[in-house]
Image (tube, rainbow, N blue to C red; front, side):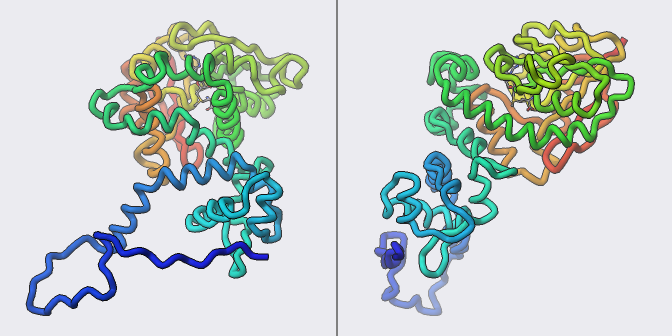
Length: 370
Ligand SMILES: C[S@@+](CC[C@H](N)C(=O)[O-])C[C@H]1O[C@@H](n2cnc3c(N)ncnc32)[C@H](O)[C@@H]1O
């Protein structure tokens, strides 16, 4: 049984000329208006929240997990995920317009590359990234973007009475879990690339500062059996470090986990410090973190900063959107190549080399002077 409903006839509106409008005489000059594609594109863009919400809803309902390799009707999927068939049909129809799921001619739904990535078990799953980018706090913060642009700072304190990470770990446990899972996804996918790139010759101890659950560190320790590792992150995150690094895990004997705030102090001696995807907050925090690394490190120690850039990247739509989200939540910014280089040299690091890690990350290799 198909649940496809007939396409409704559009109702003419003030901005939609009716097909019966009188033709314009050829002699009357007509001011060139915007191309119709541009008008429709802008309409689609301003409904971006609807499609982001639709992806979120599909991820939360588990529709992609319920759909197998064969096409299924909305009714079958609705029964599997505990939803109403008709609204689910509408949700999947909207998503299919963007290539997240596809519809067969008889109205059943099937997977596309993108919808498969909403599955939890997909090797390239973006389920938690999709949830993270659409968490409830984002829907409170986006309408305040004009305020953030006026003031140049985060709106989080005004909205929630505290800083973003305090809010996350103290008041929004589900969001904190989603954040950790999203970070796990991105770092698992990039950890192997980082391990492949970095030469650890002569490195005995490597430290990952703000290293999340430690996927980059675990990949490095797995690749280099003689190297020891230190993971430093906020206490709530460090407590949930990758099981490979924790007591009982295969790398625990070579790992020290340090709960702490890298803006306050970095009590870690290492030959190489990795700082990946954390220098995106306000300048003061960035400066303090880099200075704390320099204070902790011996002269000649290597510091590798790894970041997405808002220039020189093929993923501009994604990184510039992340850049705006960082403005809202932590008053931060994604860097350009130059802005990152200038923060590092202001802190006193000596830049040696900039290399791409993969299609969306760059590594800035520095040394501690002295
Ligand atoms: C975007 S994640 C990056 C995680 C990891 N470096 C990676 O690339 O997978 C940012 C990390 O910085 C950590 N963080 C935020 N503020 C911190 C602070 N003040 N001290 C230490 N870590 C912090 C967060 O808990 C989170 O794990």
